[in-house]
Length: 136
Length: 437
Image (cartoon, rainbow over all chains, first blue to last red):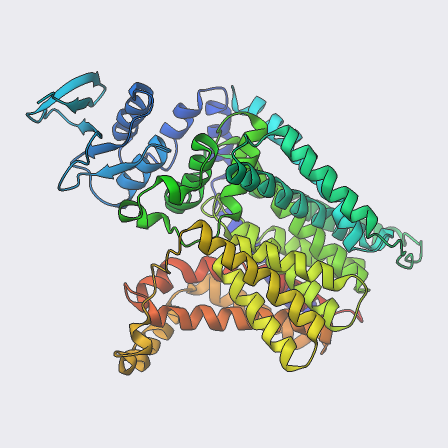
């Protein structure tokens, strides 16, 4: 009975492994391995829900001034994946997704065409812009 | 830097981490060929713990984690280990390599283990670590600690970052930050190599412990091969999360606990080390250590109880300090008080959701495990591992009753993966029941 049960278990595990797209994984590694790390994330699962959103976040990261206190992301994309990807991509800079009020000294990153009044554009980015509070 | 260059660098770092763990592992386990695989597995895990330790010390005392602090910590650990080392040899196994059929069987089982490792390595390294929980919790904290050189609770406002579970232990993020400090950059693709390395360490401990417990080569290697192919644990999704390291630490804990209850030399030290590892990795580890420690205390096995309880409790206390007292976010104690009347219906919902989880494949797999259990013989040293796995699973079934977002939500999002982390304990327990084969 033991040998039969172990053999059945091995078959079940092999069956499950066979469902994994091994060939596609190999192709993906071969295609992306020599590319920049950000390009590899862009082509991966975490950005799949909106790849342009990741391009925007990566552009924000590259344009952030040193010692930025935090960034508010204004985006029509809502939900956990958009928040987690933003928090991780911009870490260690604190991030909030479309809060009711922008904390003092934080920057605003707008994903989309809108440019809210009272903010100066620091940098136009692919898919949006990075803005700082206009001097009052 | 291309992926290949970064992965080669992380591979070399992991070899250094393994070497750093050799002396402590040598102090905790007897010498001898039969236990060499087990010692190798312990070496990598203890080396990873030293790596996390040097990172934590750097954050606490304001120096940059890197090669020099890591070497200093490793040398200190080696000196302490060598001072306490007593050289005792395990009896060597009889040297016959068997006939042609036995040799073929060995080749096949070895190839199966290697194939399982290769498949998981491919899953883990296909792309940068990507799961939501890596981005929101484990990777986020590691990246913050590496880039900002501070604990996440000091930088990320809890009101905004509750989703990152500030109350979770920091062992894995510290390990990520430590690896990045040795690599000199945050590369969340190459760092994923840690996970196949942890798989190899787990398989080594499983095989080595079974062999030391005089389980036949074929049974021990079969257990390692089946575990290597266990995709619910060794998946792309769980790469970057705490389940794979926790699975390794739970196996260390279970084997050391079983050895300690039998009064084996040095098992108390191993148990204390494993308790510390589980406590710094996940709250489930603390739970297991406390439950096992209390069970040992009830049997008046004081050394075992202390070795299981004290390190994990200390790890929990340190974790609370590091998180500034953050409370468990997903659970509500209101169900122990004013809403206690909801408990029966919530438990019913939990059980219904749990029964719907496995699917056809899952039930068939569980059926095979039950048959293997029935085919084996009562073997106390192995059965203890199954009891520990059972205690953990029972706790995972009770926990959703207190879930803020409802029992079904917690079962659907966590039960399968937390249970998958028990696989090494189950593999060790079931294989041990075939010692007489």
